[in-house]
Image (cartoon, rainbow, N blue to C red):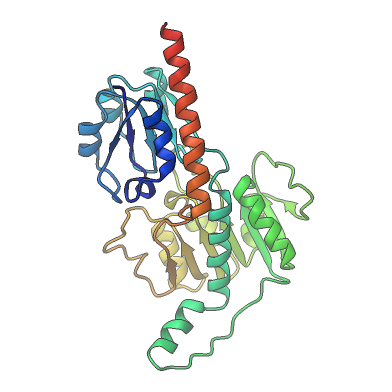
Length: 312
């Protein structure tokens, strides 16, 4: 029986009924450690012999690709592929498929939740009340604020629609300048966006050269007291630059769902008092997981059936 490797944390911790479609199609499922990001050593042990791989955000090395002796497709249960060595996969003829837009609602709603929590100091106020205090911190309103959205894909457009309804002025940066679908906004350069925005939210892939999108120079363009929201990728920002901007008050709050190492044990950024961190849960909603899983399974079945038919 041909095998399919399943590694997303949301699927290994509690395998959903949707995976039955794969077993019903005649495949044996191989799971990594439940609820944990698999290490390279675990992937090297599990991937040999697998023809398909339903993958999450775990880093995949070229050594793992070399060990994948029968692999025909990696199907991501999300949109990003920066954790995959695409050149090595292409050289081996291994297809990469993505569940485009499936988790956009979940990630967009978390970004908005983090934004509102930062604007109204919700974590600090809650913590104070829980210990018997009555902190009354003056917040800021979205209405009338200028919010910069970096990346106007499916997630960025959802965020923009809600921000427009809340009365924000929206500036956006995206090299492709997609049609915003009737949303009122101005496309600007990244530098101009940073200079004009009191709130910036990131919804784009990291630069291909591996350098952070936002380093010391870029963050220095923000108005004092800015809020920076990152539900995309940790390597979009230089962590040392963010720490410096926090300490000097350039950034009031860094609200992030992503860290360079997860969990971020001992990470000074995660421990900073003005960092609002969540545990990479943007796509961890009932709806997003279901849509992404179904799309990833569809992609697996189409690719594996096609390759099987071609071999006949």
